[in-house]
Image (cartoon, helix red, strand yellow):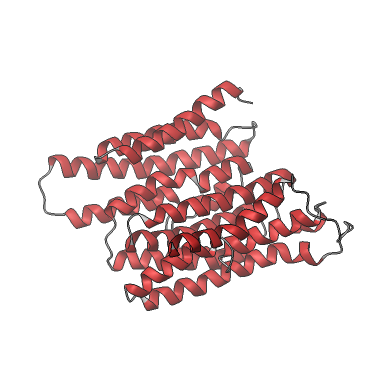
Length: 331
């Protein structure tokens, strides 16, 4: 078990390294920031000593090191070799960032690693650890056929592969892969809009991860035995629907903005495929919560919501955030 002071040190290093990437103006400094981020995140995975964490940390180290090695080779080639292969090099750098984020076709390590970690590190891996690679990806992304193929593959893979699993951590991993496809679409249409998508996605993931951590939910069938009151059940329901992108909840807002940009760019075929895949993700979120909502509950239905509960605040955030965004757009 790591000491709290050591954990805080590595946590601060993880945050600082990502900020270093975001504030850098050349690729070499970004690479250094990514390496610091890698070496500071691995110790955070060790909450308890077991073989699964050792395996997942080694898996994470090897994948990230391979991607970093490819990235530094491309950076050095660009600095010292005067060859006219700019587009090819940018495509390879884009593939390395996809490998770091766990996007298809380099995604197989991501769900396996998620299933072996605690919910705290899972949430961090799905949110903060994707910020730096996504930022680099948004800088070098070209709206070409390869980018379109990556978006389609990511959304379809995240939707279909999530149907095969009963582990909530793996389902959340494939949901993250699906959201990465939407985020890439958002970044390709507007280079700054993906930040808003990432913020909303991170907020939803953190809120849902808090419940998963609180009740130690690892599999779908655990929802049947959860001793939740009605407020918490409603909060989980709304958060699941929000993660699936169902209107009028918070998760639909970034997708709505992405859809608007894609319509303006005449990307109708891509939009149709991504929207259909989003419906599939909504289906496996409903599969997770349907048993919990339909099973007989022993709590009193007429009890009012306790305003001091965190679940009530989460419910308000998911319900009121879309209205706030719409109001800000019309002001």
